[in-house]
Image (cartoon, rainbow, N blue to C red; front, side, top):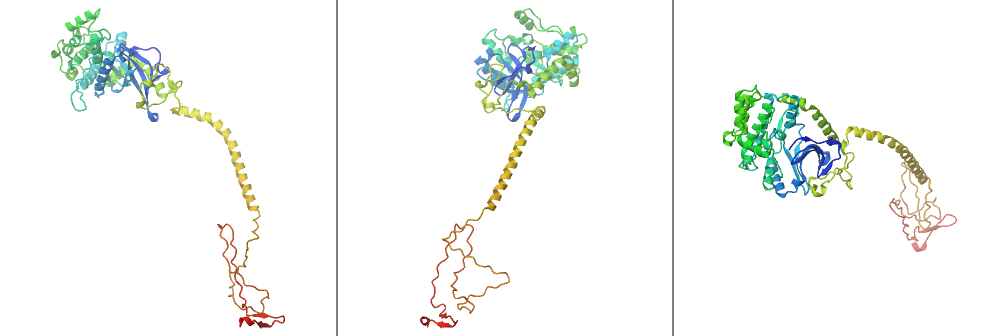
Length: 497
């Protein structure tokens, strides 16, 4: 795809939501897809800025293309190498089809070459050698990729070009877009003219519809190397037919014919990679990389990083600011986004405009930065102080009412006993006194009206509802067996003897 920059700052646009991804306006657009900055929004506040390659709608509606694209994307996900941009996810709905890629803060090799040509500064040979060595390392990793069972997958990129190589601000080159070229080529065979590849980088056997293998990618890498060393296009023609003829005839101009400082040994390596017949080329990307390192010194990664920043510093600064706004959530202020789990990402989640729908309950959890938290705290301090005074007054009133209630309960008179119940109050002996034993015979000091005292009952329990009546004791007529007359003389009772 081309790297034509989209207008405007993508981070300042309201994002469209597709499943758990927020898609911002496109960074670049080409014949097959548009590249967006996007944000992956996960659970528990997890988020990540990613790059999304979103295929054009007419491709997403082609069942054959979608099937082949998904198959190739699954294969490409098996490629794991530092010089390859990894595929993180594939999203396919009834109206959407896109790849989720790791976001690389950098610039495409096509953009860097354009900036270099505008300055009139050719790429240093050691920088060109470092870039191509990294590209070839990534391609070799793809060619050697195996399935879960260990079988070779036979992956061929088929679209190696400056547009599909990105140089990070760290100076590391990375290859993009494994899996798309083959699907587009297959669709082109059935829908002639609908999709066109980058002809100037295609091998002769690829143009003729023959079998392709890793040597096809070696040829395309050789074209890129020739252009890096010379600063010019290898094949130029007025039309498609003329371009086909030029490629079929093969390259005849060595790099040193344009870049006079290059040695003949460099010409030999480059021209071998551009051979018309696959068997005359290097057998693998690794073989070409080893020969390139033998004839050219390689710049350091730091030197390449400086070269990238020198040629694309302004664009990198703008993109870094956009990424910072996306990461901070500033761009989501006008759009309420509900975080969905991956299983909820279906066709109903597709946002058809740049304004995401406002979700119903429950409300989303907002990510609050340190600055936002400080602002909210300052806004809430005044209302909290105003609410504290009424609450304190209510608390004091409650304490006073409770105290008055306790005083009232303690001052209340006890309820008088029921007159129908006999209540006996017995004197309690002091600790130094000993109670005398009961005697059946009264002394002379006993009163004439003395009667038998009922047995002592224990004090009623606190849980007893009411005191029980003492049991009635039958009076014994012979106790005592005498009476006392008015003179105080005891007179025996005849019935008791």
